[in-house]
Image (cartoon, rainbow, N blue to C red; front, side):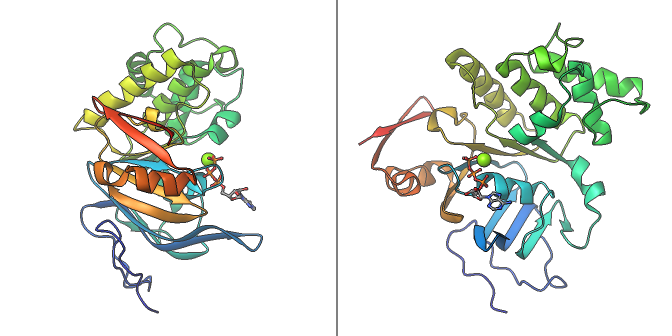
Length: 284
Ligand SMILES: Nc1ncnc2c1ncn2[C@@H]1O[C@H](COP(=O)(O)OP(=O)(O)OP(=O)(O)O)[C@@H](O)[C@H]1O
Ligand SMILES: [Mg+2]
């Protein structure tokens, strides 16, 4: 089989034979010609992409572009129909995904719906240690609970630890999801639209927390999916733009989030401006 054609410096040129596919040393995530098909439709088409240690990626694209599907593949929740996936030195298909998943933090709207409404905030965070969404009889160590409390405090949830998840505001729920995703001290953190549904103050507060996380050298490699340029936290380093399941552009943030690339991605002519590291876009 022919190797995928390199389109940008971030598209690896890798063999597609599983025995020959060895994720490169500093890569946290490596996709080679990944396709996901459902019902005769290709939701993600031949995507090759590499995320290295310390990188902070934005994935952007219109509704239905395949962003969440791609993130499910990166989270070892979905096997590709074709292509190779390397995550944290492991190759999907040759690794027990249940061992791999705790090393990957994931926050998504789909996960939020699985968290029981009557579970406490602290339990919603700590249950990530066991990869479950509701607390039953698992024995958590006190250091797990201490870590969950620290994460709650770090993500602006102090004083809400005993509140029921179902009573939280949308902004508080989003913060619980991120704290939960960080519970296992993951090496890769995937956030699918963490600011969706937030009001302006909530969005700005979350962007500022994510900016801090992006600038933390000890933080895991980050991938954040969003529709909105305004939600790109300063400190993010790379971007992958998708449309119709394919990559429009990928690479370093400043050279990728251009008017031309974004206009092509969203299918409308856009005027893009950057002020103090924050992006905005309006119709041209
Ligand atoms: N199981 C499935 N069977 C058929 N089509 C599916 C399936 N799951 C998703 N799709 C379709 O795949 C496409 C990509 O979906 P995906 O959720 O990845 O898009 P997205 O970029 O995350 O969109 P959004 O911005 O709205 O969240 C959509 O058109 C969706 O309807
Ligand atoms: Mg989505």
